[in-house]
Amino acid sequence: MERSDSQYAQAKLAQLKSEYQVEVVADWGDGEGGWMPGGWARTELDRLHSAIDLMVEAMGGKEKFVHHLGGVTVRKSDIGTHGGEALAHRVSLSIKGAFSSWTVVHEFAHAWDANYGWRLSRQLEKYTGGFTSPFLSSILKATGLSDTERFRAGKIAGRFGRRPGCNRAGYFYGDRPSGSNWSFNRIEDFAESVAMYIGWERNNDLSQHASNRIVRYQLKNGEKDSFNIVDNWMDYARRFYPDNGDYTKTKRWQFIDDLITGRIAMD
Ligand SMILES: [Zn+2]
Image 1 (cartoon, rainbow, N blue to C red):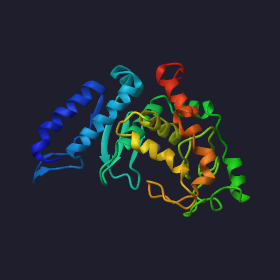
Image 2 (cartoon, helix red, strand yellow):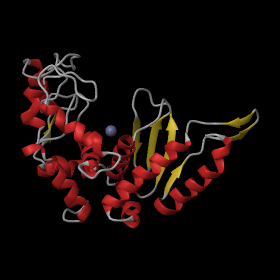
Image 3 (cartoon, rainbow, N blue to C red):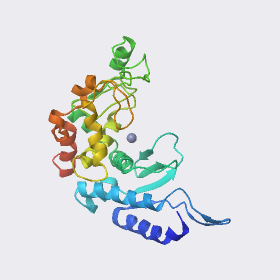
Image 4 (tube, rainbow, N blue to C red):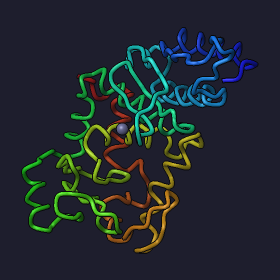
């Protein structure tokens, strides 16, 4: 943060706190050696605010957002190779480089799930017909039936661990998620489903990313997607590509819609 932006930043922080109960930990200010810029850029505060607004809008207003999240403290910190991390009432964004709107929504979705004791992701797992079984997963991996190396993800096309149960967690996802890899589990599934729901065909900051997640399954095997990943897309299309390419036809889209419109209770 530049000193010239500090007043703007203070006003933004006050607004985020009063409207959404979101507290940004300011790491900038006057220090002994003069101005300390910290890890935040002014544009990032704007991006954070816009991404929260997208969630607020999808949830049906500020009161709902505050109720679902229960207040969140956001800080920038060194969290290794991750873009972000979240627990109930706490979101950390990587100090290394700028974060995307997608990452903000993904991490806030974790904070929402965590505020309900991680039960929302369990509800999603059940609703979409999935289950978690490390035992079954280990059989797939041991017998060479998984799209991985033995007991770990590979680094080449067709070996990233995208098939159901072929991930670290032994998560057998049901229906069609927008993607899956070695790190996939019901918690990541929930966060990605929220981001997909908010971005899908709404012409907002998440929409291009959401579209990119789906259109790649129309690529040929060995082609590179917009995330710079080469994979055997045709082989995976039936697990991920929704009917007519319409993500609103998936159980995940329906689940998030039911959740925020109150047709499904958050228990
Ligand atoms: Zn995550």
